[in-house]
Length: 326
Image 1 (cartoon, helix red, strand yellow):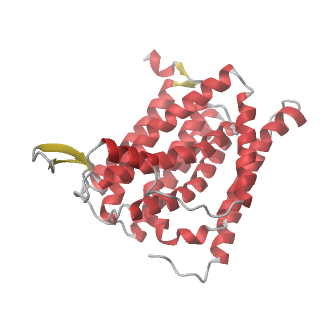
Image 2 (image 1 turned 120 degrees about the vertical axis):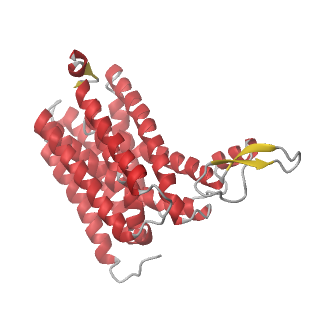
Image 3 (image 1 turned 180 degrees about the vertical axis):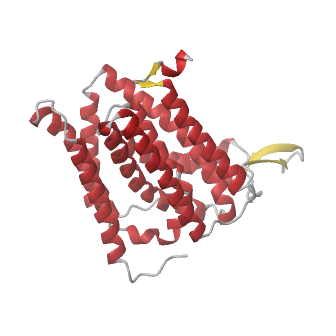
């Protein structure tokens, strides 16, 4: 049993195994018990599931705090709050994608599940790559920090960019290199269908698969903000990965809870912009103003949570008289 206590990326292996067991159990329970059949998820049920996932994430963060100390615990919560807030922007994009491909609500949840499973792997690869880069060349962290400051400032002054799904390069590539059915076939990503020219049965992708591809590509774009942001908080690979994945796991429930009212979070982007600038600037302050001293983790957590909470509260108050889009 010595392997359980072996160091893996700076953390005992049993920590990683325990986390992966939690992720597997949540996914199996979600797909195999709660959603064995395709059905539309109501707002009330979505809110309950969101609260459940947040409670699990908070409990896991408390365990990190107790088992590994206050500093990793605070870093976990800081990363979690940033990723969760960025997920609200992700909800808006996912809603546009499902609308474009005319995906009924009862099939969206299963598509999101498979999308998140892919994200778990892709985020792991991105985080592992980032950790390896920083371990070899610490100055890469300054590039991450500068990128965050630039992105935050750009977000402050940019308008609401429209998303051109129809001209997405991945969609055009798949459509030109694979057979794609014009209609949905339930929750299936691929089906056997008759070739229009030869009449032979062939494999073909469905619009649900195209939606899944675009959702995962959109997440890669969002990861360009969230992954550097968490590296600017800590270089602890375990804290980075677990905080990211815990926030992402609740994205399915969050989507159905917020999709109809996502327009009410218009002002949150300014809070997120301020968070990205703050997190990026923190690296330069720590290394060049504090002479390599640590920026107080409790201050990072407090500022991050305060900015996000203010952005959410201000958005809901400013749009309190607007109807929900359903």
